[in-house]
Length: 181
Image 1 (tube, rainbow, N blue to C red):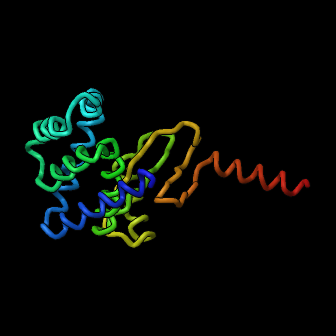
Image 2: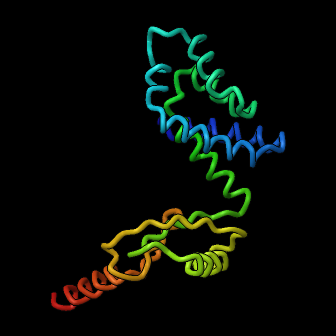
Image 3: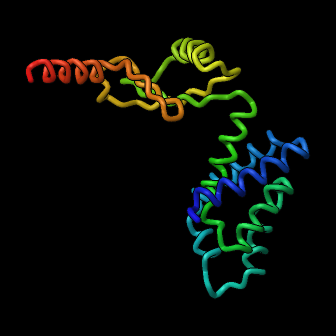
C-alpha cells in the first residue's frame, strides 16, 4: 500500500478522534509544530530509524521530545513509531490539514507573482477567491517568481488560474503556431 494512502488513513483516524474530542484546532496547530520540529532536526530521524534501538526506546524518545503535545498527537506519533512509519508524519500532517481545511471552509491559494503581494492585494484576492470558491476563509501563500513577468498565477488544489504576462504570451504563441499549420 502506498505511503500516501497509509498517511491518509492515519490522518482520517486522527481527524475523527480530534473532532469527537473537540480538539481539531489544537491538533492542527500541534501537527504543524511537530512537522517543523522534525524538519528542523533531521538527526531525530537518524535516532528513531536506528535499527539498534529497541521500539520501546524509540517510543520513549518520542514521548520525551513531544511530552507537551496533545494526547491524540502524542499517541499518533507513538503508534507511527511502533509501526516503523514515523517517516510519513509529513504526509499525515498534510492529509490532516486537508481534512481540517475542508471541515472549516478554508481554501489554500498559492499565488505566484513577480514581487511580493501587498496586504491590499492579498485582501482583494481573498475576497475574489471567497466568492469564486464559496469558502469562508482563504489562506494566501505568495511566492515570488520573476519568470511570470507580470500578473499572477494562482493554484487552488488542481486548478490553475494563469493571469501572468508570460502565460498570455505562451497562449498567443500557441495560437499563432496553430494558425500557421
